[in-house]
Image 1 (tube, rainbow, N blue to C red):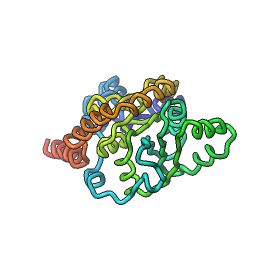
Image 2 (tube, rainbow, N blue to C red; image 1 turned 45 degrees about the horizontal axis):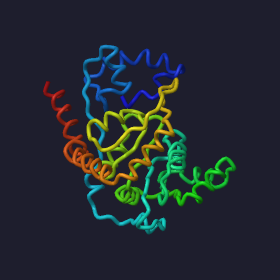
Image 3 (cartoon, rainbow, N blue to C red; image 1 turned 60 degrees about the vertical axis):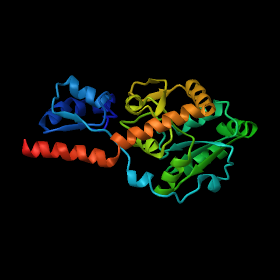
Image 4 (cartoon, rainbow, N blue to C red; image 1 turned 180 degrees about the vertical axis):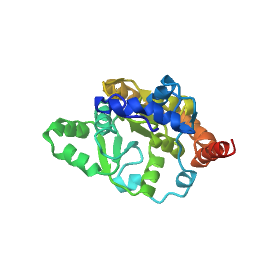
Amino acid sequence: PTGFSLLHDPRYTAYYAAMPDHLRAMDLNVFLSDHYQDVAFARGHGIEKRVLIPNGAAREEFERPMGFDLRAHCGIGAGERIVLHVGSYTGIKGHKEALRIFLRAATPDTALVFIGNHIERFEREYRHHRFHLSDRWRVRLRGKRIHFLDLDRASTVDAMRQADLFLFPSRVECSPIVLFETLAAGVPFLASEAGNTAEIVDWTHGGWTIPGVKDTRGWVLPDITSGAAGLERLLERMAERREAAQAGHKAWEEHFTWQRIAEQYVQQYQRLVHG
């Protein structure tokens, strides 16, 4: 299972009513978290054939020489801080929330960079819709800049390694791989409580969560004011960011590379085959 994102959707009532029998029929159910709603569902229905194997990030991607210079590509000065958001523009990955948090935070000399598939849709909306007219003025007056990029994978990884802070106020996740990638990049994160983000913070000490509330679907609505306050605080405290980045990267090296994750899957396959 990967989250049961529509667990609370009435259209899927019959689907999830049948799910416990499907889980019981499996020789093993692998969950990415020990606390998210999918494993809580399994526990609530007495499913004992389960194991926790988390997500991770690839060492070979994040330890190769960099070939893309984000600052040069966007014209970002050496004295400007870079806040990065990576995710396809689908409406649920926190793009608009990240924009609102960035605009509300008193953080001059800062660039917010969005990278993802279909990001040009969000850029058109931001640059041309009258709803964002005041936002555009606020960005100019406060010495901020916003960039929208659709990069290839290698350049995206390089950009992640050059950020000062990763901002990810997503509405719905299971166990967001992009946070493990941020740890691999050696960059701390500030993220919503979607999925098992709080658990990733506990595992790695590589970031912080933004308080929020859940709607009837179980999706998270991050608190914009709290997010802006957190962004302000973290951008002003380089030592605190560096400490989290180092702790998160160390945790990733020890526990969350894909090599480590693959070994856990192999162990489970072997246990089943020989058991």
